[in-house]
Amino acid sequence: MSETIKPIPDIYSNQDYGLGEAIDFEREEWKRAALCADPAYKDVNFFLERGESSKAAKQVCAECDVQEECLNYAEDNNERFGIWGGKSRRKRQKINQGQ
Ligand code: SF4
Image 1 (spheres, protein in one colour):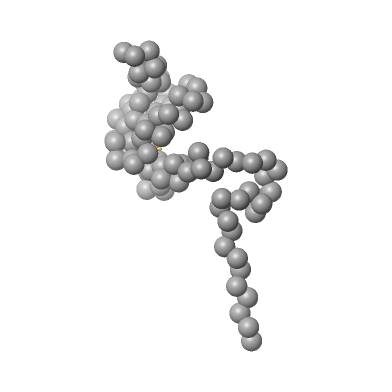
Image 2 (image 1 turned 180 degrees about the vertical axis):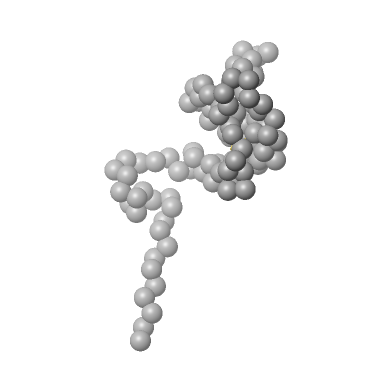
């Protein structure tokens, strides 16, 4: 009896996803290393309500290998909410203004 070997999906090709449009996987590659996507941090809130502490989220970001990419993504996409790259929106705005 022969064993059927399933091909490993090519994550750099969208043909297995049926998305209908090209995704710039190279540009989004950094998301694979996003520490906040680790189930170990599923209870850490990166999108805070007014008055909530960002300390836990920033601690996760401080250990993340893709902080710079994350921060750049937030800037490029004008992300208005949440902690990105260990920075709040206000802090990101100050960085963009050169402060
Ligand atoms: S820097 Fe923070 S928000 Fe960005 S991917 Fe890493 S853990 Fe997530």
